[in-house]
Amino acid sequence: MSEAARVLIGEQIGDGGLELLRNSGIEVELGTDWGRDELLANIDRFEGLLIRSATVVDAELLERATKLKVVGRAGVGVDNVDVEAATEHGVIIANAPESNVVTAAEHTMALLLALARNVPQAHGALTEGRWERAEHSGVELLDKTIGILGFGRIGQLVAARAQAFGMKVIAYDPFIGVERYRELGVVQAETPQQLYAQSDFITLHLPKTPETEGFLDRAAFEQMKDGVRVLNVARGPLIVDQDLQSALDSGKVAGAALDVFRSEPLTEHPLFSYPNVIVTPHLGASTDEATDRAGYQAAEQVIAALTGASVTSAINMPAVAPEDLEVLGPFRPLCHHLGRLVSALAEGGAVDRIEVEYFGRIAERDCRPLTTSVLLGLLEGRTEEAVNEVNAPSIVARRGIVVSETSRTSARDFTELVRVTQIAGEERTRVVGTTLGRRHRPHLLELWDRRFNLQLHEHLVLFQYEDVPGMIGHVGVVLGQNGINIENAAVGYDPDEEDDAAPATRAVMVLTTSTPVPPEVVAQVEEHPGIVTGRAVNLD
Image (tube, rainbow, N blue to C red; front, top):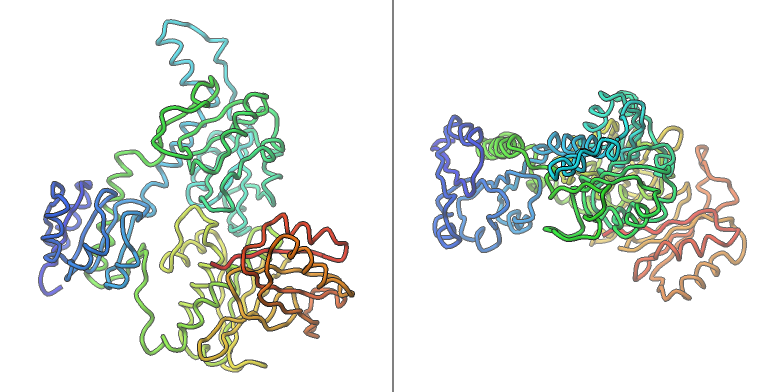
């Protein structure tokens, strides 16, 4: 920087972050007491802005921020920042995604111990004048099994701490490499049901997505051991409150510890009156150290952006170089779709390796942005961390998943191809696609070892079936009975390759529909004895 860059501190952060900025030769101005009008009037003087959760960085502010290069958010999320508008203005948005992982893991352990030993209940009784030793006898953690649903950074920290107490650890997260489980001495659960059957304690560390909302429901509780204890320091909607209440009433669940709730703030709830339920007001990230760490990490990112260094926690990515954009740009949506599809088709098990192969003209370019798009499709909604184009490769690496990228300048049958293979143990799942036409529409060319050519749309439903008469009609009838309109369809044939894993008698049907196909409709199609398996996939 030829002249000292100016950074506005819009909200209170720790002294460590301020000191780091000043020691880096940056001119720091405090605007922690500024109102919205004063912020709008002065933002054009600053190259950097450091905020927490109260300052709203919207299109209006960005329009006036003519010098702004970076916004640092001292926290995990960026809900108060219009990321799309910032990208349009060329402003980097960075956060501090690692700032609260230790704090969340420690709060989980605090609730785990309190739940096991009835600490809050005993404290309440004694301060109210009752000496109740027998009533609040607890259980030891030694040799008990803790099941961890979601094995990202926080889940892995919880595992290490639980092992220090002599607990056995089993975890479920298909997007963790097998070697990572081995390194940590943790048993890999192939399914949630396997975890339920073995766990004395179950702790949630999943992201909130349509697939995980209500993850612990009546069916899940019924598959757990009698007397299990449940913890949630992740997201409130992961548990169906009424089903947890019923499980507590029946004695199936011996106790629960909850730090998060479906709606917050919350001061009244039926579960609050249960003597075997411990609650805290979303304290998982609330420590002085986490607050200081968030400010320091956000300051590091602001400095990196202003000095031209790598911004490792950027939420938005700089555009692809102009010379590569024409070639690579149209393939990014395709690669994202292929990542989503290969994940949906896999039968389960921990992912060990992702292989991405490029053929044709695109192979002459630096295809790393396309590989990142594949990883985004693979991971989005499946990790506790928010995934973006900057952090996707590092998240995959931390989870022990190997990513390989190969390029060949020639392609068979098509000018350009992208092939994505997911490897989990002995299972290999492969999808192939390309773009066609002047508008570069993404087309799916192969899955389940069968070839076809179908333009991809938002809603897909896929079936592998025995190649006998009447199967296409059966699928069409079931979808029609459920009011689902088929937009396009293709049938895959035997590619006649030596590595073909599917029996030659099987075919694949791929359909695009105007609306999503619910799981119960897929199950209805699968009732036919000729249908081997089905999947509904949404690519939005």
